[in-house]
Length: 233
Image (cartoon, rainbow, N blue to C red; front, side, top):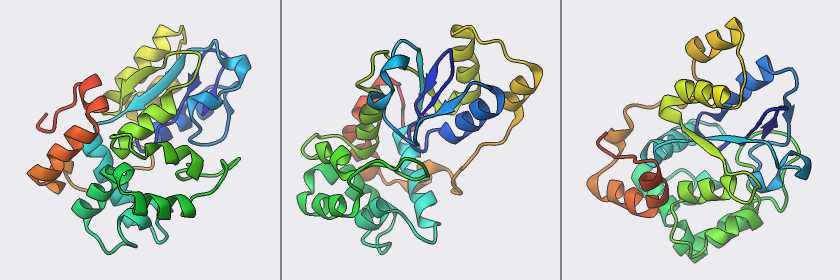
């Protein structure tokens, strides 16, 4: 989470946030960091009046990015290890487990035991304590929709959510909305800087069979319908 005197940015996982973080810390002298991947509900009370910026992405794309990123790491995080049976399951089986995590009590309990019991003050990674993930139990939500709801609810201000797929244009639109005038280097960064912390993978559509694509549509309907995502778009 990053706050400036004009607005707050909440960083949803694998949704363009590393690009926005770097932009804000580079071009806003008043930018202050509050932890990493902290939800809006943890925003300090004195900042509650500020507009809030966030980003979202297609859930189908998210799961491919998440799987590719974790499977290529020498030490994947606890979430990946748990839903992939320590890397022995392929994309489809791992993502199916992730989508159905809230209904798989045994797997969820194993995962909760692996997660920390508090937020990390600094660092990187998931930063999702066990108590924060526990409400996924019986929620009917896919993991990404759970994360979306968890990260963006509970604050005083309703977030303005841009789409990762149009991040550069949406970031500019938000900054104009809150009255920020960008200098030439800042505009150049938005327009030309390469993506940050991007996963290496092919076209995400090729990772799915029809059954798994439908399961994402069902479990992540909250994000899919709100932001009008389509698998074939």
